[in-house]
Image (cartoon, rainbow, N blue to C red; front, side, top):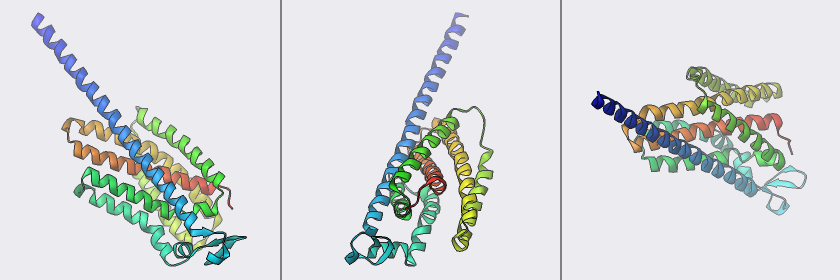
Length: 262
């Protein structure tokens, strides 16, 4: 009997150690996800701000096109925003995401992280126009609003006991619908459609923030026992990419709704 009690006690202790190791590993994994995402976000907004600065000028001697009173596009700005190159820049991040997803299994974790940061800079180029269209104050204000909303949704997705994995297919269908509607509205230019797209977009990416956070957590818990650090490292990069896209899209849709235009 004493041997049985001793064995049971040792079994419980071992289980407790394994659970503690998994909890510690999960914290490290989530820190990696949020840290990588944050660096990507910093790269994106730094690139967007720098490119918008190079693309505009107040000196008529350097102007390639006028965009407002005392404000002009440089030759770089004209190439980015008014030439056919603008279509390549607009859709480049989308192509990058699909390519990254297809190539992730062939990349090392270090290479995947580097590619993610290159993608973040590409996204900065794609959204650099916001600093010309919206006031700097409103960009910062909407960024803070998005940050608070994102943090709350991600914390809920991480801590909730409710299984929200069923949201995935519905939300992805919503994203596809948003992409199609946005492309159509490029040619229609309807403010009403843009308003509807922005509201629906905020709701969809709010849901995806919670969904992706829970998925990242559950994926780690399912795979932690393998001890494959290379795989877990790439999983952290893909998790960071998903949450990064949730944040950026929610920010852009909120900016359309709340931003003050120049």
